[in-house]
Amino acid sequence: MKIITVCGSLKFQKEIMEISEKLELEGNCVLTPIYPTNSDKDAYTEEQVIILDKMHKEKIKLSDCILVVNVNNYIGNSTKSEIEFAKSLNKEIIYYTDLMK
Image 1 (cartoon, rainbow, N blue to C red):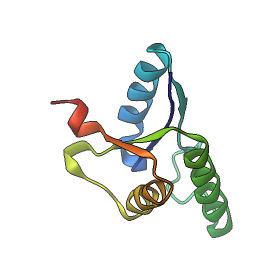
Image 2 (image 1 turned 120 degrees about the horizontal axis):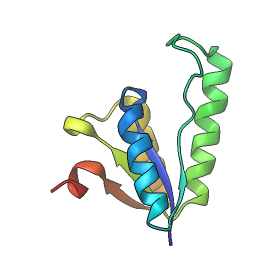
Image 3 (image 1 turned 180 degrees about the horizontal axis):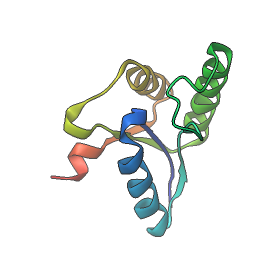
Image 4 (image 1 turned 135 degrees about the vertical axis):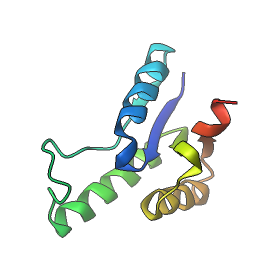
């Protein structure tokens, strides 16, 4: 069992939820990003975005590794920063596209 924090663009919500379900059914503890509960892309204030970013980095601290959901090799700026943060903590980094090979 591993504790895995899933990282990736909010545009990949469907893929992130599918991957998270699969990983948990394999016996892992999966920490996922928070998504807006309504369809408004600007659902959060700037202050709330900062809080959510900080809390996601706390999830990375708790985890054994991160799983980067990089559909079509897309990695946005926030995800790049999460990867760099995970590297600074010597966390294992797994890429979704590598799992699909």
